[in-house]
Amino acid sequence: MSERLEDIAAAMVADGKGLLAADESSGTIKKRFDVIGVESTADSRRDYREMMFRAKEAMARYISGVILYDETIRQKAADGTPLVDIIKATGAIPGIKVDTGAKPLAGFPGDTITEGLDGLRERLTDYYKLGARFAKWRAVIDIDVAKGVPSATSIGSNAHALARYAALCQEAGIVPIVEPEVLMDGAHDIGTCYEISKATLTKLYTELYAARVVLEGTILKPNMVLAGKKSGKTSSPEEVAEKTIRLFRETVPAAIGGIAFLSGGQSDEEATANLNAINAIGPHPWKLTFSYGRALQAAPQKAWSGKAANVAAAQAAFAHRAHMNHLAALGKWQPDLEQAA
Image 1 (cartoon, rainbow, N blue to C red):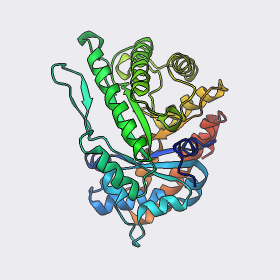
Image 2 (image 1 turned 45 degrees about the vertical axis):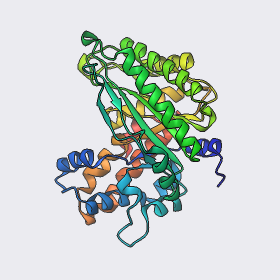
Image 3 (image 1 turned 180 degrees about the vertical axis):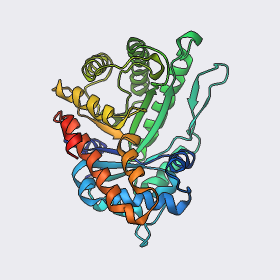
Image 4 (image 1 turned 135 degrees about the horizontal axis):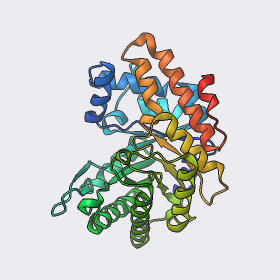
């Protein structure tokens, strides 16, 4: 495989393929395991992820790459094979989450800044040797209109950090996924999400240009334009699609390698239906696919429940969700296909 950044980025958004976000921190995966009654240990986390990576057909047909956590990129499967090699054997590209999380932004209550730039150059060199060819950095933009959140300082600081991270990735031969997530947790309406997302993306691309980042060798991992969860309003897939594409046409350069949406707390089916509606109104200047964590994993996690006897059922659940999102990435998904499963 070519090592050009542009080629890696293109492979990450190949037709009908998307990214599996398996980069939950140890704290996050513990919460998920608590729900299914599984103790979170290095071995149980490995067994769970190995179960998905070994779903060979689903991985080969629907998954272009896997975002890993520091622990996972170094782990070996139960039989001693490095997990990275299992991923590569399916044709998927290994990637790595490199930020160290969002912390409160000093002086701006309610805002956060993502940390992890210190020592990043050295870490990227290490991850490249371990097999990573793309990385991910998530900026978190919360919305609380009454409290003036997000501030312009928060948007600017996070966009600047994303640009510095992206430049370091490209220096290391790694494709940066830039993820400026405008959260859907608030009580805001869809119009507010649109405006905040617009301000965020506008600032992001100003910073990426300033940092001399090669856009063709980047992937954008954005939120969809949605009403906040606490607003009591649900937007139809058609409205989400129309507003999301309008937003991108206003803010996102056609030159970028592609767009892989985060699911951001949407249910499995919601994330699939919205992605499908977005692709159904194409063609667009960019490839638009998925980079889902929960929306790909909730069903297999439940089916697996930590039992070796359930591996086949869990892999079938994973294959189904991956297949549905593959169809959505092509604009060919239909709700009745969910029932057929």
